[in-house]
Image (cartoon, rainbow, N blue to C red; front, side):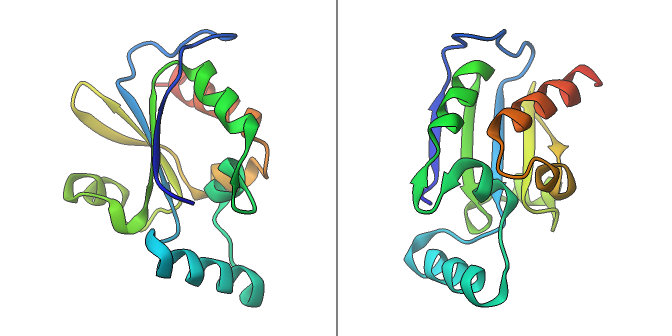
Length: 137
């Protein structure tokens, strides 16, 4: 799972309003060693990252994830925990995996590990939860 950035075009759904960016942070380290450590932990200790399950199937990106990003219509950045900068680390702390919303230069946790885990491996459910969480703020 390499970190990536996508910009959705909003086709097929109402783009988010008032959101500068969504940032998803995996509960896994990036880089070859981080990927190997994650795979080892998943196989031998049953550990997993709920955000990884939503964006990837094995080592491949889910096609449904790309559709969700397009529907959201805002930039979506995916980072590994060792790729966070200091301001993001201060907001997130140890709540991983997580989705952070950036608005007007402010960062706020939108969905934490519990909500991401409840999505199972359904990216469409994640989109629904993102929209509900934003509507409630």
